[in-house]
Image 1 (cartoon, rainbow, N blue to C red):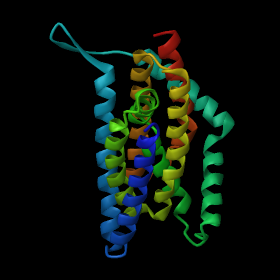
Image 2: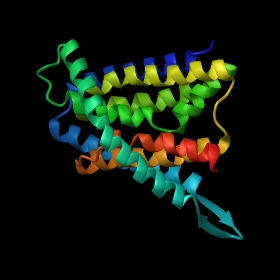
Image 3: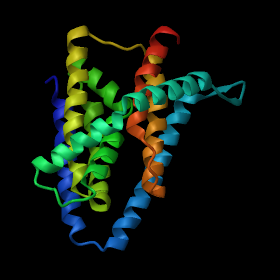
Length: 239
């Protein structure tokens, strides 16, 4: 069934969130902070692995790094566009809206948890590739695998950051559902090069999420999101 992958992904995120709420009530605050740091380390190394698989190749028994120009240009231009549009403010406002509508006004960390979790589970090649597979051939295997990973990530984020992480299921439903629908209507949208570039810069943005988790920094990852669009454009027309 077309769309089953996104439905499964969303349900697994919600399930992981409720698991996190259950364990959060039984864990000390110091342990919750340690879990957040551990998640930051895990996200950083997962993203590094994702970047290296698309950026480093073996030529004549030597490691060769490529796509540096694309990476630098798209990151710079994407961040400028995101800052000018102030994308993070829109996501923050949406988080505030959800906090108000769900009766969580007293939860000071709700919006940060929502934004950080959303940037973690929405960015990346698995979301795009899996949604395209789901739309073209009703193959939900990639999104189900992503959902299992997201379930664990959101469970730990809910423990360490709060219940706002659970509501990342909503952007996932909107984003992946839209890509699935477009893939179904168009029969496929992106060339492999575009997917590779998307994966590279997407994993770099996920790295920034890991840095925020581990070092409690405030890199505005949402303002860097146009980088993904620019990298896809580069791979389609310039790759």
